[in-house]
Image (cartoon, rainbow, N blue to C red; front, side):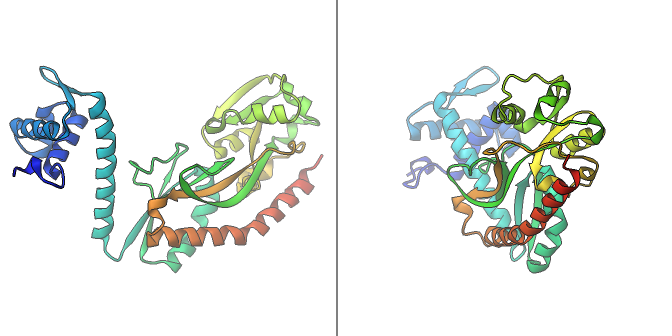
Length: 311
């Protein structure tokens, strides 16, 4: 019985050859990447196609392209190899575990990073790698174990723990002298690119759907939006109460309250397959407890700023 006729399915070598050929777009490039001959790659692919009963590539003179079946298989194979590589990396680490956390830049800079020393002291055998990005984590290919995101509801298909409820907060420099939401018509509205619809939703909830601001100004993060507002460039729509932790917030005022019924929350999310990982369980328990402990401070901070800057 040949290796391609194994009762447990195609060999690891055949799957590696297929994955590399798909990534490289050709058998010769795949052969160079794997350190074998092009004929070896071709042999493995032909055997795999025979075992599966379908063509995986359309052969060209110097390149190959995936068929529809090949593309579907590649997506699964690539994700599977990524999980295997992650598992091997964790195993090699031995007692020293590592957890990769995807989190928004503002949350990381002003809340998470200042508290990481507490986690590291309690869990000296767990190393944390933080990826600060606005892009949603792809748990299949990014190597991310857990993610912290701001959304209206937890993502379906993931285990989610709510960390903190937040609501929109209008902040601007005192020099703008805003009195009512109608005054926004003479202002530049500062938006955060990942939530580009936030101002439209806020205006709609405030009964100002037709209001046209002077212009819109977009930034990729809340710190940048706050800096622009503090410099007098416009009115920022950020999140209460976390925004008050930013030093530049002390130079801003909240000219009027946001309408009721709109808000979101910070969630910790991870795939179900990660729930049995000790590092994920440890990080989840720590951050949920740390945020629960900090909620009273954040509430006091929000109340103090509201009282100080109310017009």
